[in-house]
Length: 228
Image (tube, one colour):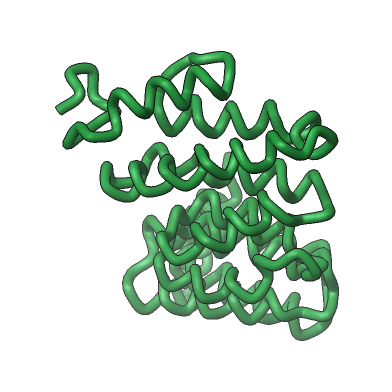
């Protein structure tokens, strides 16, 4: 039984005994506020894992807004573990407004850059694309750069025009990085995986992607079987 289901049953039982009925979102909001106030990191992290699911359903508009706002506030917590969990929660909501929360952390020197990158891949917001490209290009932490490529590959689920724009930037980025032998040795696999997902083609070399894209990029929908 999931915790949200448990919370729903518990709230119903309270109601039947004369108490106030809390929705699952209200219950999590109440408990999360308490955990953040008293500094209970374990409870806060567990509760933050529920924010994304509740945001999409069954929270109403006001509850969803409150869930996102509380997760955004938790992303500024002095405990890095809570802040990381909060960024993941922001990403899990899929809320466009969450992009503003991630932007300040999508830079190489941020201690939360990796968590922000992973959350950005879930949001797939257009304003995050340049920041992800920059991290893939320049981050000294190659794990963060690797995950930036993964996040860029997530735009395979975006609208065709956005997906095309990302592809047209990831391809030359890979070409540029390939000139740095040491960096490309580490990032070749994540770079090619991002291109495979964006183009929906199981090609095995950068040159194959370059050639395929040269042939297809002029199509209205270069990713469709017919080419649009």
